[in-house]
Image (cartoon, rainbow over all chains, first blue to last red; front, side):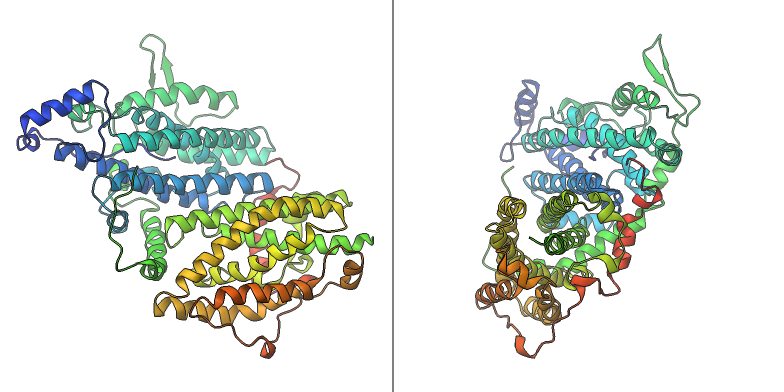
Length: 328
Length: 251
């Protein structure tokens, strides 16, 4: 998990006017040739800023995303699930570590990023502002949110920034296992006892609306991202990712005899596009801006973890050590 | 060899690993730094894996299958030492417990790898390689933090004082102690304790921490035979919450 639905700042042409035109042209030519940009290479300020924002959001999504599933580690039923759930959530925390390192290469420290997370200044994937009420919710997250993240991350792994793209390649390899785990858990529920079926259908019903917003607002309403796409920061549009996800997973959901709680969901055979009830983007905005069912709780947990661990970090601090950017 | 004695030994090994694995896993998402979050999760996975290996040996001796044994017993049927079930508290307590426990566990595994009872010897040989890293992790952190800031030293010392009576409870002798020793299954709890003391002292000497005078301390016994603190039953209830919705279901 758990990247996806990044929020980008509107890019203004003005931002580029202060850049050296020759360097900018060379930079764009390199990207057009498919070269990777490395930490010490020249890059426009806007590129640096947007990448920090994107990688940081992704890293935050990993550690915040570890919370709803993490609460089910201690309650996972049976050894097989308990061990898999632990390993899965640990992977996500490991992804955060990789991603913070990748973002650090651009000049922002992990500590600054975590401070911005706690202060609510930087975002994380909006889906984690929704609760995982039951074990089945955790299964739906493991399967479908991870599936969504893979769609997004496979695209972004082809992006232009070397450290991010390498981190994503490693992450995607692990995500492939999460997807298998999540699918296996959902299959057991969906083909299990009537109680299990009821639990998994209820969880799917709860999670469907957040899943539909996972890739971010419709392209019609998104801020202009042409520059970011030319620079291979953003690799696929929100709608493209959503369509791809629906194509890959709706049939698999139906195959299990589960229903999707949207009567309008169907594939238009003429256009090849999925049609669905437009997600509630007002709710999306409200939740992403802090007013969701779990925003306060998620940040409070993170804040408590930071505060409780502060003495450890102080004790580790060597006054003679100089800050060194990680290699990524 | 008396099968009851072997089962008694296996239950305490398995229950210790299961309950501490569970406690370690509670750090996921809450570690003081990401690296520790990940480390505690790795140890949790190893320990729960170890418990499964011992429960599997128990099953071969006629006990119920591992899921049933782990997820359906009550606190008074558990054989873990009380040290293991105490809540994680702050990171200092979790680290001290990890240090005290794993330094004993590695000795047990080393001894058991030479055991006359072959199934245990095989498992212990395989698993001790993993516990070695748990010990390395604990000792490194104790040395690091135990000679760092005043605040860290004070926290660790307080936790050490608090944990020591419970740690001594790990060496509560088995009902079958003499039998196990005579049959060459392992050298017994007193021997584990003597070696443990040497090893933890060697680490503590390298720090600003002090080991309390163990002669003046009353060990917290009873855990090996179902006497537990008020913390174990809630842990077990939480662990079985989903499993008990339908114990016959395939999850």
